[in-house]
Image 1 (cartoon, rainbow, N blue to C red):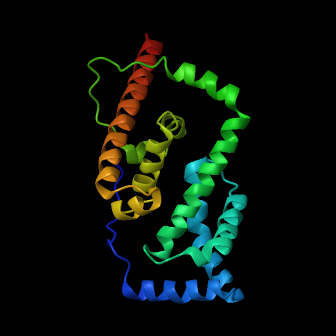
Image 2 (cartoon, rainbow, N blue to C red; image 1 turned 180 degrees about the vertical axis):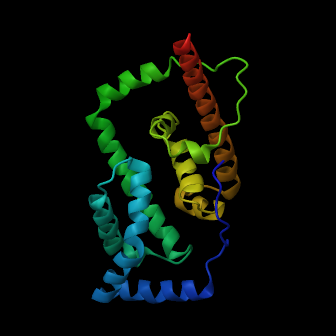
Image 3 (cartoon, rainbow, N blue to C red; image 1 turned 120 degrees about the vertical axis):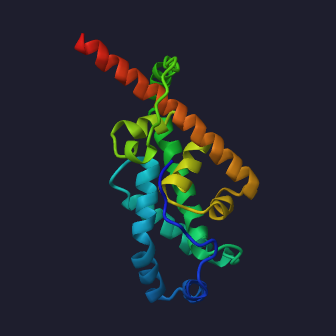
Length: 210
């Protein structure tokens, strides 16, 4: 799957200490705290939103995430790191946006589903696919969208956003073992789709050369 940087399972104590100071200031509605929040996390939230929504203009998502942080900061109990809690909010905002997009394009989505359902695995097509390379292609997003919403979320959090399993478990609210198992099977389903898609593409290209 995607090559990923090694991340420590627990944030350094200095980071936790910094989070505590920031959270305390946010609860007290300190102006500098919200400026620091934006400076440190706007880029990260934007990256999550672009990955989920496949759009470049994510300012509305960023603003909505910060608004939810402002409204719910007193509910942050410190059970996870602040960044993991923020991730969860960002993911939930993205899910809400996807639901809105889905309602707007319900007819189109149904049509595309019928087309995607016509794809069948290519017999005897044994090719090792590098997901890391395929994520650079324009087709990758449409293939990823053929997975279930849950599979998409887990692939994005683990293989695109490079989160540890423990962080993902906090974000999605599932046991660690369940998360590991579902990511394993989500990757298998993604690889099957990739193998099918690029197998068909190869056959089409060969047919065009005859």
